[in-house]
Amino acid sequence: MMELELMDKVQFIYELALAKMELEGLSAQFEVTNSMRKFRLISGDQELLKKRAAYFKRINGLITDYEKLVQFNQTTSINQYLTHWIYPYKGKFHPQMIRALLNFIKVKEGDLVLDPFLGSGTTALESQVLGINSIGIDVSPVCILISKVKTQSIDVLDKIKEAKSEILKHNGKTLMNFDANPKELRGAIENIEDEKVRNFFLVAELIAHSDTSRRRRDFHESFSNNVEKMIKSVEDFKKAVNEVGIKLGNVKIEEGDSRNLKLKNNSVDGIITSPPYSIALDYVKNDAHSLEALGFDTKQIRERFIGVRGSNSERIELYNQDMMKSIEEMFRVLKPGKFCVIVVGDASYFGERIKTVDFTIDYATKNGFKLIKNIDKIIFGLYNVMQKENILIFQKP
Ligand SMILES: C[S@@+](CC[C@H](N)C(=O)[O-])C[C@H]1O[C@@H](n2cnc3c(N)ncnc32)[C@H](O)[C@@H]1O
Image 1: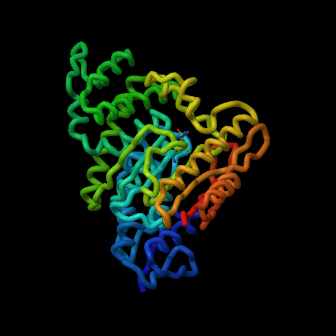
Image 2: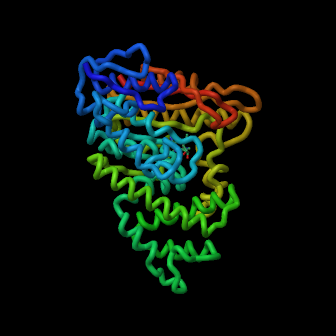
Image 3: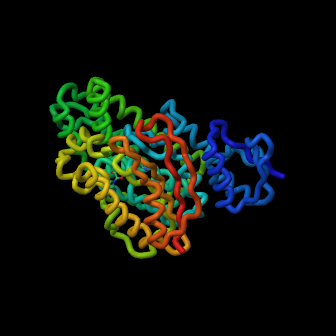
Protein backbone atom coordinates (compact mmCIF):
# COMPACT_ATOMS: atom_id res chain seq x y z
CA MET A 1 0.00 0.00 0.00
CA MET A 2 1.17 3.51 -0.78
CA GLU A 3 1.66 6.25 1.74
CA LEU A 4 0.29 9.77 1.34
CA GLU A 5 2.12 12.24 3.54
CA LEU A 6 0.39 15.44 4.60
CA MET A 7 2.17 18.76 4.28
CA ASP A 8 3.85 19.88 7.49
CA LYS A 9 1.68 22.92 8.00
CA VAL A 10 -1.62 21.05 7.91
CA GLN A 11 -3.01 21.43 11.42
CA PHE A 12 -6.66 22.43 11.36
CA ILE A 13 -9.67 20.17 11.22
CA TYR A 14 -11.02 21.84 8.09
CA GLU A 15 -7.70 21.18 6.36
CA LEU A 16 -7.92 17.49 7.19
CA ALA A 17 -11.49 17.50 5.91
CA LEU A 18 -10.32 19.12 2.66
CA ALA A 19 -7.41 16.68 2.37
CA LYS A 20 -9.85 13.76 2.53
CA MET A 21 -12.29 15.45 0.19
CA GLU A 22 -9.69 16.13 -2.47
CA LEU A 23 -8.70 12.45 -2.43
CA GLU A 24 -12.35 11.53 -2.94
CA GLY A 25 -12.60 14.03 -5.80
CA LEU A 26 -9.53 12.48 -7.41
CA SER A 27 -11.21 9.05 -7.12
CA ALA A 28 -8.75 7.65 -4.59
CA GLN A 29 -9.65 5.12 -1.94
CA PHE A 30 -7.70 5.54 1.26
CA GLU A 31 -7.53 4.99 4.99
CA VAL A 32 -6.27 7.36 7.64
CA THR A 33 -3.64 5.97 10.00
CA ASN A 34 -3.56 6.46 13.77
CA SER A 35 -1.43 9.56 13.76
CA MET A 36 -3.84 11.31 11.34
CA ARG A 37 -0.78 12.63 9.49
CA LYS A 38 -0.38 9.66 7.23
CA PHE A 39 -2.96 8.38 4.86
CA ARG A 40 -2.71 5.02 3.10
CA LEU A 41 -3.80 4.76 -0.46
CA ILE A 42 -5.83 1.64 -1.14
CA SER A 43 -6.44 2.43 -4.79
CA GLY A 44 -6.04 5.45 -7.05
CA ASP A 45 -4.03 7.04 -9.83
CA GLN A 46 -0.65 7.86 -8.29
CA GLU A 47 0.40 10.16 -11.16
CA LEU A 48 -2.83 12.16 -10.93
CA LEU A 49 -2.52 12.50 -7.16
CA LYS A 50 1.08 13.67 -7.46
CA LYS A 51 0.04 16.24 -10.04
CA ARG A 52 -3.09 17.61 -8.40
CA ALA A 53 -3.02 17.12 -4.60
CA ALA A 54 -2.98 20.26 -2.44
CA TYR A 55 -2.56 18.99 1.11
CA PHE A 56 0.01 16.25 0.53
CA LYS A 57 3.73 16.65 0.14
CA ARG A 58 4.58 13.08 -0.89
CA ILE A 59 2.75 10.31 -2.63
CA ASN A 60 4.57 7.05 -2.00
CA GLY A 61 7.83 8.93 -1.47
CA LEU A 62 7.45 11.09 -4.61
CA ILE A 63 7.27 14.86 -4.05
CA THR A 64 3.99 16.35 -5.23
CA ASP A 65 3.84 19.16 -7.80
CA TYR A 66 2.26 21.43 -5.21
CA GLU A 67 5.07 20.88 -2.70
CA LYS A 68 7.46 21.96 -5.46
CA LEU A 69 5.30 24.89 -6.53
CA VAL A 70 5.03 26.50 -3.10
CA GLN A 71 8.83 26.80 -2.90
CA PHE A 72 8.64 29.56 -5.53
CA ASN A 73 7.85 32.25 -3.02
CA GLN A 74 9.31 35.73 -2.56
CA THR A 75 7.54 36.32 0.77
CA THR A 76 7.75 34.85 4.26
CA SER A 77 4.13 33.74 4.15
CA ILE A 78 3.57 30.15 3.02
CA ASN A 79 0.35 31.08 1.26
CA GLN A 80 1.83 33.79 -0.91
CA TYR A 81 3.86 31.81 -3.46
CA LEU A 82 4.15 32.73 -7.16
CA THR A 83 2.26 35.98 -7.78
CA HIS A 84 -0.37 35.39 -5.07
CA TRP A 85 1.17 38.01 -2.76
CA ILE A 86 0.80 40.88 -5.21
CA TYR A 87 -1.34 43.65 -3.71
CA PRO A 88 -2.44 43.67 -0.04
CA TYR A 89 -6.03 42.53 -0.58
CA LYS A 90 -8.08 41.91 2.57
CA GLY A 91 -9.96 38.65 2.86
CA LYS A 92 -8.44 36.65 0.06
CA PHE A 93 -8.69 32.89 -0.21
CA HIS A 94 -6.00 30.48 0.92
CA PRO A 95 -4.76 29.24 -2.45
CA GLN A 96 -4.22 25.72 -1.10
CA MET A 97 -7.87 25.50 -0.14
CA ILE A 98 -8.88 26.49 -3.67
CA ARG A 99 -6.64 23.84 -5.19
CA ALA A 100 -8.20 21.18 -2.94
CA LEU A 101 -11.71 22.40 -3.78
CA LEU A 102 -10.95 22.29 -7.50
CA ASN A 103 -10.01 18.66 -6.92
CA PHE A 104 -13.11 17.90 -4.90
CA ILE A 105 -15.47 19.34 -7.50
CA LYS A 106 -13.76 17.20 -10.15
CA VAL A 107 -12.87 19.90 -12.66
CA LYS A 108 -10.36 18.61 -15.15
CA GLU A 109 -7.70 20.16 -17.36
CA GLY A 110 -9.48 22.17 -20.05
CA ASP A 111 -12.74 22.53 -18.06
CA LEU A 112 -14.08 25.99 -17.28
CA VAL A 113 -14.37 27.38 -13.74
CA LEU A 114 -16.10 30.63 -12.78
CA ASP A 115 -15.50 32.99 -9.88
CA PRO A 116 -18.14 35.77 -10.06
CA PHE A 117 -16.62 37.59 -7.04
CA LEU A 118 -13.02 37.28 -8.15
CA GLY A 119 -11.43 39.73 -5.71
CA SER A 120 -7.67 39.47 -5.96
CA GLY A 121 -7.80 36.54 -8.38
CA THR A 122 -6.98 33.49 -6.23
CA THR A 123 -9.39 31.16 -8.05
CA ALA A 124 -8.07 32.33 -11.43
CA LEU A 125 -4.41 31.76 -10.55
CA GLU A 126 -4.99 28.39 -8.88
CA SER A 127 -7.06 27.18 -11.84
CA GLN A 128 -4.40 28.44 -14.23
CA VAL A 129 -1.61 26.39 -12.61
CA LEU A 130 -3.78 23.26 -12.78
CA GLY A 131 -4.39 23.72 -16.50
CA ILE A 132 -8.05 24.55 -15.85
CA ASN A 133 -9.58 27.42 -17.83
CA SER A 134 -11.30 30.11 -15.82
CA ILE A 135 -13.47 33.20 -15.99
CA GLY A 136 -13.17 35.76 -13.24
CA ILE A 137 -15.68 38.57 -12.78
CA ASP A 138 -15.55 41.41 -10.30
CA VAL A 139 -17.22 44.78 -10.08
CA SER A 140 -14.04 46.44 -8.86
CA PRO A 141 -11.64 47.78 -11.50
CA VAL A 142 -8.85 47.40 -8.93
CA CYS A 143 -9.57 43.67 -8.54
CA ILE A 144 -9.66 43.24 -12.31
CA LEU A 145 -6.30 44.92 -12.65
CA ILE A 146 -4.63 42.91 -9.85
CA SER A 147 -6.01 39.60 -11.10
CA LYS A 148 -4.85 40.30 -14.64
CA VAL A 149 -1.36 41.18 -13.44
CA LYS A 150 -1.09 38.01 -11.32
CA THR A 151 -2.09 35.73 -14.19
CA GLN A 152 -0.93 37.55 -17.35
CA SER A 153 2.47 39.07 -16.50
CA ILE A 154 4.08 35.71 -17.22
CA ASP A 155 3.21 36.27 -20.92
CA VAL A 156 5.21 39.51 -21.09
CA LEU A 157 8.08 39.08 -18.65
CA ASP A 158 10.77 40.16 -21.12
CA LYS A 159 8.80 43.23 -22.15
CA ILE A 160 8.33 44.16 -18.49
CA LYS A 161 12.07 43.98 -17.92
CA GLU A 162 12.70 46.06 -21.05
CA ALA A 163 10.19 48.70 -19.99
CA LYS A 164 11.82 48.87 -16.57
CA SER A 165 15.13 50.03 -17.94
CA GLU A 166 13.97 51.81 -21.09
CA ILE A 167 14.10 55.59 -21.24
CA LEU A 168 10.45 56.50 -21.54
CA LYS A 169 10.95 59.85 -23.22
CA HIS A 170 9.95 61.59 -20.03
CA ASN A 171 12.69 64.10 -19.40
CA GLY A 172 15.21 61.38 -20.12
CA LYS A 173 14.15 59.32 -17.10
CA THR A 174 13.56 55.60 -16.79
CA LEU A 175 10.53 54.26 -14.95
CA MET A 176 12.74 53.56 -11.98
CA ASN A 177 14.12 57.04 -11.46
CA PHE A 178 11.08 59.25 -11.23
CA ASP A 179 12.13 60.74 -7.97
CA ALA A 180 9.36 62.99 -6.88
CA ASN A 181 6.11 63.23 -8.70
CA PRO A 182 3.67 60.28 -8.82
CA LYS A 183 1.74 62.07 -11.60
CA GLU A 184 4.84 62.16 -13.77
CA LEU A 185 5.37 58.47 -13.13
CA ARG A 186 1.76 57.77 -14.13
CA GLY A 187 2.29 59.67 -17.35
CA ALA A 188 5.22 57.42 -18.17
CA ILE A 189 3.27 54.27 -17.29
CA GLU A 190 0.37 55.35 -19.46
CA ASN A 191 2.77 55.68 -22.38
CA ILE A 192 3.54 51.96 -22.29
CA GLU A 193 1.88 50.42 -25.32
CA ASP A 194 1.40 46.81 -24.25
CA GLU A 195 -1.64 46.57 -21.96
CA LYS A 196 -0.25 43.69 -19.88
CA VAL A 197 3.03 45.55 -19.30
CA ARG A 198 1.17 48.77 -18.49
CA ASN A 199 -1.04 46.93 -15.98
CA PHE A 200 2.03 45.48 -14.29
CA PHE A 201 3.52 48.92 -13.57
CA LEU A 202 0.13 50.35 -12.61
CA VAL A 203 -0.25 47.71 -9.92
CA ALA A 204 3.28 48.41 -8.64
CA GLU A 205 2.19 52.04 -8.43
CA LEU A 206 -1.04 51.16 -6.57
CA ILE A 207 0.87 49.09 -4.01
CA ALA A 208 3.17 52.08 -3.53
CA HIS A 209 0.13 54.30 -2.85
CA SER A 210 -1.10 51.78 -0.32
CA ASP A 211 2.37 51.54 1.31
CA THR A 212 2.55 55.33 1.46
CA SER A 213 -0.91 55.85 2.92
CA ARG A 214 -0.95 52.88 5.32
CA ARG A 215 2.68 52.51 6.29
CA ARG A 216 4.08 55.96 5.52
CA ARG A 217 6.73 54.57 3.22
CA ASP A 218 8.46 56.72 0.65
CA PHE A 219 6.40 56.50 -2.56
CA HIS A 220 9.19 56.16 -5.04
CA GLU A 221 11.23 53.72 -2.98
CA SER A 222 8.17 51.59 -2.50
CA PHE A 223 7.39 51.68 -6.24
CA SER A 224 10.85 50.49 -7.25
CA ASN A 225 10.94 47.81 -4.53
CA ASN A 226 7.56 46.54 -5.72
CA VAL A 227 8.67 46.42 -9.32
CA GLU A 228 11.77 44.38 -8.39
CA LYS A 229 9.87 42.00 -6.14
CA MET A 230 7.04 41.57 -8.64
CA ILE A 231 9.53 40.81 -11.41
CA LYS A 232 11.17 38.17 -9.20
CA SER A 233 7.77 36.57 -8.59
CA VAL A 234 6.95 36.49 -12.29
CA GLU A 235 10.38 34.93 -12.92
CA ASP A 236 9.53 32.37 -10.23
CA PHE A 237 6.24 31.67 -11.93
CA LYS A 238 8.00 31.04 -15.23
CA LYS A 239 10.61 28.80 -13.58
CA ALA A 240 7.91 26.86 -11.77
CA VAL A 241 6.03 26.26 -15.02
CA ASN A 242 9.20 24.82 -16.59
CA GLU A 243 10.57 22.91 -13.65
CA VAL A 244 7.31 21.41 -12.42
CA GLY A 245 6.07 20.86 -15.97
CA ILE A 246 2.86 22.84 -15.77
CA LYS A 247 0.47 23.36 -18.66
CA LEU A 248 -1.27 26.64 -17.91
CA GLY A 249 -5.03 27.05 -18.24
CA ASN A 250 -6.54 30.01 -20.08
CA VAL A 251 -7.71 32.89 -17.93
CA LYS A 252 -10.39 35.41 -18.83
CA ILE A 253 -10.86 38.32 -16.46
CA GLU A 254 -13.64 40.83 -16.95
CA GLU A 255 -15.19 43.69 -15.06
CA GLY A 256 -18.82 42.76 -14.50
CA ASP A 257 -21.68 42.21 -12.12
CA SER A 258 -22.41 38.90 -10.40
CA ARG A 259 -26.13 39.81 -10.51
CA ASN A 260 -26.12 39.83 -14.28
CA LEU A 261 -23.51 37.49 -15.74
CA LYS A 262 -22.77 37.72 -19.42
CA LEU A 263 -22.59 33.94 -19.70
CA LYS A 264 -24.83 31.37 -21.34
CA ASN A 265 -27.07 28.97 -19.40
CA ASN A 266 -25.37 25.69 -18.39
CA SER A 267 -21.97 26.86 -19.61
CA VAL A 268 -19.49 26.42 -16.74
CA ASP A 269 -18.08 23.23 -15.18
CA GLY A 270 -17.67 24.59 -11.67
CA ILE A 271 -17.92 27.69 -9.49
CA ILE A 272 -15.68 28.59 -6.57
CA THR A 273 -16.35 31.96 -5.02
CA SER A 274 -16.64 34.09 -1.96
CA PRO A 275 -19.13 36.97 -1.99
CA PRO A 276 -18.91 39.91 0.41
CA TYR A 277 -19.87 38.60 3.87
CA SER A 278 -23.00 40.65 4.13
CA ILE A 279 -21.82 44.07 5.22
CA ALA A 280 -18.73 42.93 7.16
CA LEU A 281 -16.14 44.73 5.08
CA ASP A 282 -16.50 47.92 3.10
CA TYR A 283 -14.64 46.97 -0.07
CA VAL A 284 -14.98 50.44 -1.55
CA LYS A 285 -13.51 52.15 1.51
CA ASN A 286 -10.83 49.53 1.75
CA ASP A 287 -9.56 50.14 -1.77
CA ALA A 288 -10.46 53.84 -1.93
CA HIS A 289 -6.83 54.95 -2.33
CA SER A 290 -6.38 52.66 -5.35
CA LEU A 291 -9.76 53.43 -6.90
CA GLU A 292 -9.05 57.14 -6.59
CA ALA A 293 -5.51 56.73 -7.94
CA LEU A 294 -7.06 55.09 -11.00
CA GLY A 295 -9.40 58.05 -11.37
CA PHE A 296 -12.67 56.45 -10.22
CA ASP A 297 -15.36 58.23 -8.29
CA THR A 298 -15.86 56.03 -5.23
CA LYS A 299 -19.37 57.42 -4.60
CA GLN A 300 -20.52 56.34 -8.02
CA ILE A 301 -18.81 52.98 -7.84
CA ARG A 302 -20.50 52.17 -4.49
CA GLU A 303 -23.84 51.84 -6.24
CA ARG A 304 -22.70 48.66 -7.98
CA PHE A 305 -20.99 46.97 -5.02
CA ILE A 306 -22.82 44.34 -3.00
CA GLY A 307 -22.88 44.90 0.77
CA VAL A 308 -22.08 48.62 0.84
CA ARG A 309 -25.28 50.17 -0.50
CA GLY A 310 -27.80 51.87 1.80
CA SER A 311 -27.54 52.20 5.55
CA ASN A 312 -28.87 50.46 8.67
CA SER A 313 -31.44 47.71 8.03
CA GLU A 314 -31.83 48.84 4.42
CA ARG A 315 -28.20 47.88 3.84
CA ILE A 316 -28.87 44.30 4.92
CA GLU A 317 -32.06 44.15 2.86
CA LEU A 318 -30.21 45.33 -0.25
CA TYR A 319 -27.42 42.83 0.40
CA ASN A 320 -29.96 40.01 0.57
CA GLN A 321 -31.65 41.09 -2.66
CA ASP A 322 -28.32 41.38 -4.46
CA MET A 323 -27.15 37.99 -3.24
CA MET A 324 -30.44 36.39 -4.30
CA LYS A 325 -29.83 37.63 -7.84
CA SER A 326 -26.21 36.46 -7.73
CA ILE A 327 -27.20 32.97 -6.54
CA GLU A 328 -29.83 32.74 -9.31
CA GLU A 329 -27.15 33.66 -11.83
CA MET A 330 -24.70 31.07 -10.50
CA PHE A 331 -27.41 28.42 -10.75
CA ARG A 332 -28.28 29.48 -14.29
CA VAL A 333 -24.76 29.36 -15.73
CA LEU A 334 -23.62 26.14 -14.03
CA LYS A 335 -23.96 22.88 -15.96
CA PRO A 336 -26.32 20.32 -14.40
CA GLY A 337 -24.60 17.85 -12.10
CA LYS A 338 -21.74 20.28 -11.41
CA PHE A 339 -20.70 21.96 -8.17
CA CYS A 340 -20.79 25.48 -6.80
CA VAL A 341 -18.63 26.32 -3.78
CA ILE A 342 -19.55 29.43 -1.80
CA VAL A 343 -17.30 30.50 1.07
CA VAL A 344 -19.17 32.87 3.34
CA GLY A 345 -19.36 33.90 7.00
CA ASP A 346 -21.80 35.57 9.36
CA ALA A 347 -21.18 39.19 10.18
CA SER A 348 -22.27 41.47 12.98
CA TYR A 349 -23.83 44.88 12.67
CA PHE A 350 -24.23 47.11 15.73
CA GLY A 351 -23.84 44.06 17.95
CA GLU A 352 -26.41 42.05 16.06
CA ARG A 353 -25.46 38.84 14.28
CA ILE A 354 -26.33 38.69 10.62
CA LYS A 355 -26.81 35.10 9.60
CA THR A 356 -25.34 35.25 6.12
CA VAL A 357 -24.51 31.54 6.08
CA ASP A 358 -28.10 30.42 6.81
CA PHE A 359 -29.41 32.95 4.36
CA THR A 360 -27.11 31.65 1.61
CA ILE A 361 -28.04 28.03 2.27
CA ASP A 362 -31.78 28.83 2.35
CA TYR A 363 -31.82 30.82 -0.83
CA ALA A 364 -29.50 28.51 -2.76
CA THR A 365 -31.58 25.44 -1.87
CA LYS A 366 -34.82 27.28 -2.69
CA ASN A 367 -33.30 27.94 -6.09
CA GLY A 368 -32.71 24.28 -6.75
CA PHE A 369 -29.17 23.75 -5.45
CA LYS A 370 -28.55 20.75 -3.23
CA LEU A 371 -26.25 21.38 -0.25
CA ILE A 372 -23.81 18.50 -0.14
CA LYS A 373 -21.19 19.77 2.32
CA ASN A 374 -20.97 22.49 4.94
CA ILE A 375 -17.51 22.82 6.46
CA ASP A 376 -16.67 25.10 9.36
CA LYS A 377 -13.47 27.03 8.88
CA ILE A 378 -11.98 29.03 11.72
CA ILE A 379 -10.49 32.40 10.83
CA PHE A 380 -7.78 33.97 12.91
CA GLY A 381 -7.55 37.71 13.30
CA LEU A 382 -8.97 38.56 9.92
CA TYR A 383 -11.85 40.76 10.96
CA ASN A 384 -12.71 41.20 14.58
CA VAL A 385 -16.37 40.89 13.63
CA MET A 386 -16.11 37.23 12.64
CA GLN A 387 -14.59 34.05 13.98
CA LYS A 388 -15.55 31.50 11.43
CA GLU A 389 -16.62 31.09 7.89
CA ASN A 390 -18.25 28.20 6.11
CA ILE A 391 -17.33 26.37 2.96
CA LEU A 392 -20.70 25.56 1.41
CA ILE A 393 -20.68 23.09 -1.44
CA PHE A 394 -23.80 22.89 -3.57
CA GLN A 395 -24.62 20.70 -6.53
CA LYS A 396 -26.95 21.59 -9.38
CA PRO A 397 -29.21 18.57 -9.97
C1 LIG B 1 -14.70 38.29 -0.36
S1 LIG B 1 -14.16 39.25 -1.74
C2 LIG B 1 -13.48 38.04 -2.80
C3 LIG B 1 -12.06 37.70 -2.43
C4 LIG B 1 -11.47 36.61 -3.31
N1 LIG B 1 -12.02 35.32 -3.00
C5 LIG B 1 -9.95 36.58 -3.24
O1 LIG B 1 -9.36 35.51 -3.08
O2 LIG B 1 -9.32 37.64 -3.31
C6 LIG B 1 -15.66 39.73 -2.49
C7 LIG B 1 -15.54 40.48 -3.80
O3 LIG B 1 -16.85 40.75 -4.32
C8 LIG B 1 -16.73 41.88 -5.16
N2 LIG B 1 -18.08 42.39 -5.50
C9 LIG B 1 -18.90 43.19 -4.79
N3 LIG B 1 -20.04 43.42 -5.46
C10 LIG B 1 -19.94 42.76 -6.65
C11 LIG B 1 -20.81 42.60 -7.78
N4 LIG B 1 -22.00 43.21 -7.83
N5 LIG B 1 -20.37 41.83 -8.80
C12 LIG B 1 -19.16 41.23 -8.78
N6 LIG B 1 -18.31 41.36 -7.74
C13 LIG B 1 -18.70 42.10 -6.68
C14 LIG B 1 -15.85 42.82 -4.37
O4 LIG B 1 -15.23 43.76 -5.22
C15 LIG B 1 -14.86 41.84 -3.74
O5 LIG B 1 -13.70 41.79 -4.52
